[in-house]
Length: 245
Length: 245
DNA sequence: TTAATAGTGTCTGTGAGACAGTATTGG
DNA sequence: CCAATACTGTCTCACAGACACTATTAA
Image (cartoon, rainbow over all chains, first blue to last red; front, side, top):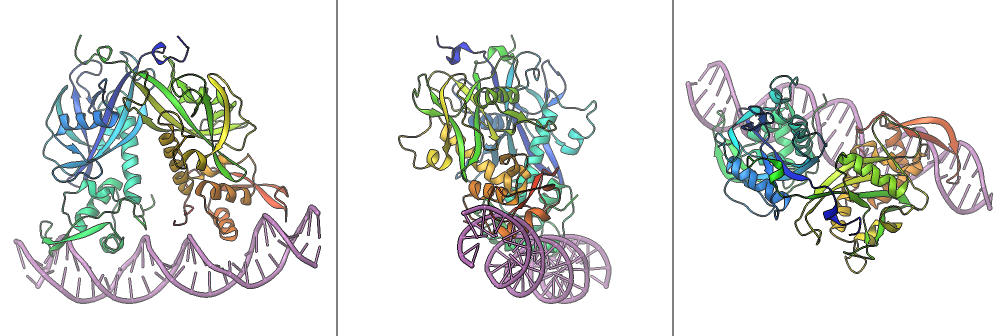
């Protein structure tokens, strides 16, 4: 055998882990599951699982997502029904990240609209939405299993950056939403307050971002608000600017 | 064994592939090596290799980089000597991407200053710098092996996006460089012409981007130009704006 | 001298942020 | 009526882009 024969090299287990983010009650939240097995038994962790022998990485992520939440991953083009944005985030492969053996995890980022309570599936004893600030604040006893705090932090930072120059914030909204609801998404993800009047002018003036559906709603109280759906634009020009710290 | 025991799941080979970019003679170029073994024997490919059993992903990428080019990867903080920016790019795991077996490749992006001719090392019969436009233009007979054209395209797009809002363009420059040399980096990576006067005002006015060394040079001809080194800033505010298509 | 590159000044248009003011609902 | 939210208009400042102009070298 040549020294470059792949089968001559050390085997790895490959998993996908999911950073599933949503905005619940004006707070950015992530889906976590309680581990039923050692290591880290009883601790909260990101949902995830092993990639199957003949399965693409994105397909494995979509399968795990469906198992944990019932959500369908939103491939570009597909539409209708509950769909969520899914993209690859980063890969974590520290030799010591899993005490059992060498596991390389391909983390994926999912952005979902607010959902009913998650259903526990597969290897999860239970699942819940947890506020991102609590999961990442002062890594003490409530810390996530494995290196999942780091994975979550990267996912949150990715989401914060991408809603700035893309229309991804609409992935947190239901199919039809108001400008105010979209603004509260930005406020929750960035953790800042935005001027409602400038925000309104900005998003309605960015070509391809929002398309009016014709309907209105008063579900937020006050004057009826126009309903919009996401326009075709994926990259925003000009971008939404995240206020300075 | 529990069904969640990692060792019960299918084994993968894990590799790192490198998108090594530099600017040579005002053209964005990538390092490619000629394959000496099947599959794709004789074709050009991105440098890369297998991750060792006890090796971190970034360490594997840095090791392959050193083997192929002699470059040291620039970890944040280290300095001096030939250093190159290294960051993880994305992971490619299509079940059919390697005809021999299931291989998951964690691609990394390297930005390097212009270098002497690459030295072939390891499993490469030979290595060369190739213009990115030729490697990606009309995927015909000169196409890269495996899915490396897709990996290269993602690396190039990452580089194009990141020099916009970060100081990464200086990673293409020698330790000390002029504003004109930095401008030619932007022009080569973006493939556009920039106004030298506005560019000068912009980069020298962005805090933390450039620090004057005190020296000057006439290596570009014309009036002597101030020499700068990269400042401490990693994120540029305001960003450099890539002109529209 | 010309050619080339470096660097400064000045104008104009776009747009972000601040914020006054009006519109339309529910209570 | 008041409170809340939706939306429009206007002002100011920052800055990107265009481009005239000066400065300093090599040939």
